[in-house]
Length: 325
Image: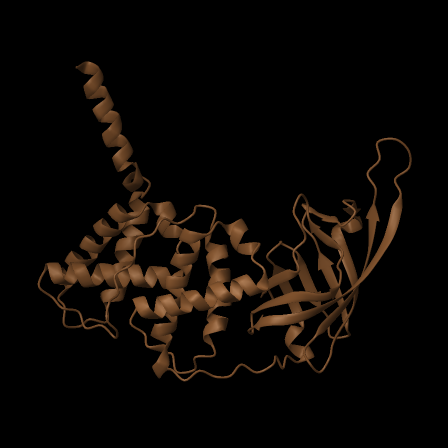
């Protein structure tokens, strides 16, 4: 009997563990966030606002652990807030006026290897695919993007998603556009679809520093040179170490938007005995841009090669990068 009571106590602790990771400061900050959202509702009394905010606090802390909530991106947070505010206001007989109908968040099992930066990255990429539907409202774009994040992170591991070839990814994204539009009652047949133009990216648009999905930093200079800085897990195609963890060279873009990188580097052979040998490497690669926005690009190697790759991984012809500065 004593053992049963002890086991029951442990079970209750495990059940409540998800809520216990919200500290007093965390709960106070969340409460203040909800109060801040309610400040624009002048029709509510101070007591009503506090009652709704407290209800939202309890509902959020019960439904999500702090880690789960913190890993969500801005679009997801807005959806959660709207859903909580709508339900908690109805609990006290108040109907908050909303700019758009509240769509209940679909509960999905998120693969833990997808972090906040990963989800931000696929959100930017997916929004680029929605740009052909020029009549979509901002609210519809947010709804579709949130749906895509939930579908992707519950269906695929991060590694499986990255390993998709270009044809697979385009097919999957179009299927998800269709399914997400149906589930959210967005009629794409009433949305004017633009015929995508060939990328007309100017050379100036690439000036600056970009960080790729492999952690490599690329700086495109106005004088036609570039510099790549690699993380420690990057090696050359010969599995040698890159001298100074950098490669450099010249770059240019033709009238069709094809980017050419002429890459030079030095690599060293790791030897336990004798003098370390230094080799010189050079590759020329041509890339076609698949997705381009002001702060994100995705390009595919169509000819030639490149210096380096992640250790113990097959080199990918796809490069994705976010603008750093």
